[in-house]
Image (cartoon, rainbow, N blue to C red; front, side):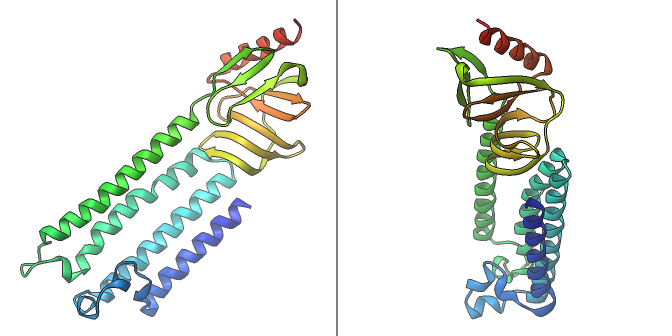
Length: 248
């Protein structure tokens, strides 16, 4: 499903780039389409259209590469590809000013007001990126596990309490079943947290890092869980502790 979304999104960007660059659909360019006729007359529309079209082609390639990498299990490459969208966006914003005569004085230099506007937009993007980065770091951290009141407590976002009395089977596996779909959860790099569908397994709740096997599979009355800790050693220790708790 994800690969089709990626191909469709990339195709849309290519179509937009083609329309702007080769068919003069400058009304598709944000900012230009809201200018007055007088201000539009001061814009190098042909140069801006060619530049924006090329950048849309670049973004299409990045998006397609990210989804293809994700589809084939190259999770780190996919994350880096998605991250590349931000610097490309910075470049687009700064470079696009070159074609706008409204932002420059008689000597061709950017006016103070234009510099301030560009700086404000870039600052906002940086703040949003920093906030997103912090959030992804927070939710991607390995969960903490503890045993309290007859249950296994899984901390953090998408945390869960699993009653020990509901556990029917525990298995330590070196490989995960193929993940066929994310139903509701976090999918960043190698981290998987939340509700997913697995090949041959059906729906399951994951809280793990795919790059750090082994994985603990818990078959419970309320469904299947797959978890692991921050290191392989900690995961094996957790597995032994679960077994010890079940046999008390």
